[in-house]
View 1: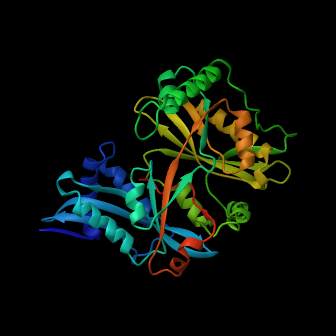
View 2: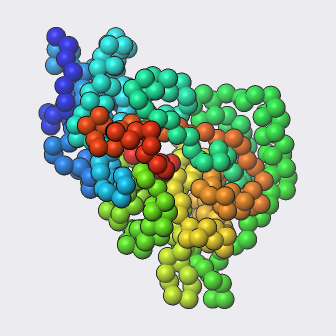
View 3: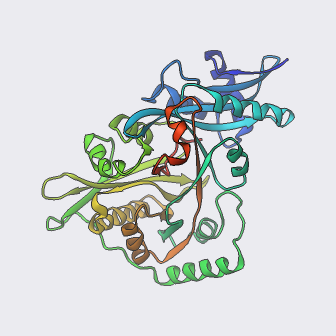
Amino acid sequence: MIKVREVEDKDIIPLTEFLPKSFPITTKEFWVHLFDFWWTSNPAYIPQFPRGWVVENDKTLVGFMGNIPVKFLINGEVRIAAAANSWYVDSSFRGEFSLHLFNEFTEQKSASLFLFKADDQSFGKILHKYKFEAHILPHNQKEYFYILDKKKVKTLISKFFLTDRFQKVPELWEFYRRAGFLIIAYLHQKPVSRGGVLPEEAYTSSLCTSCDDAFYRLWKPYLSTCTIALSRDKKTLNWLYFSSGRSYKRVVIQCHRSRDKTLAGYMVFDLITCKETYTEHMKLVDICIENNDPQVLTSLTSFAIDFGKQNNVAVLSVWANSSETETYFQRAFTMRRAAQHYRYIRFSDTDTMNSGRNTHGIVCLPMIYPPQ
């Protein structure tokens, strides 16, 4: 008999054995740590919140969808958003049972907002039928690249020319455009001024190991302009930035004023490592700069470049979250390409925000998302 039901304690170990078959690059130990990140160490999780749903065929697991609570601010109120994660059904049971899992996700009563991450628009038409709204990130839809190791030509080509999802060459005009940027950068890449630690400099950047209330205060002016936004409280940021359970390393770089050591900005990077002895890609996933100060950006960016070189990284990429940072990256980086990362949101049918679905104001979705 085939049935769909909520994840129970007894499913955790079987899931750690089932999911590596679905996601071959993962291991049983990886899923143990990931489940701990999703639920045990998550400050938004409570026992009443569904951890997800499974498809069971005669007591054998053949499908799964994870359900991760995330604190969001809706009109200044802290609410819970549900992030869909690691949706997979064995090929013999797809179709009806895949849809059944998705229905369980969207019909749950524990969340005010539903979140879905996709790498392209192919799934957008289905989500639209379920009242999801599409949001494309970053705002200016561009990514900027910096070569850290010119010897790793194969990696430079794959990360700059090819899309992350389809691994294919872009359209002919875009191909020539990217080729030109790569050749120019390879032969004569623009240097980025060092942030440094000299006493006369206004700002100093360094690695960060935890977030305090200063990180929330840095975000507060930006959050006040949004109707819907990720909660940037200290516990949520520490969970997103520093919890274990990922298949990659996450690095937080902070920038302080030299005169009084107050926080002026920070960047968060994921280090995507290949099976060889080096890290392919140092990828920006979150950023907050007080007043979009270009000196702070210079300090952080130069530190990130130095860190990447010291840690055998092939290429670094960033994106802008404001017109000021866009202007800075245009001047500082030679290589750039079009970029579109899709996020989808849907309001709960039982939530008070649902009545204003078409007039809910400014939605500020982050690039950072619980790992899947």
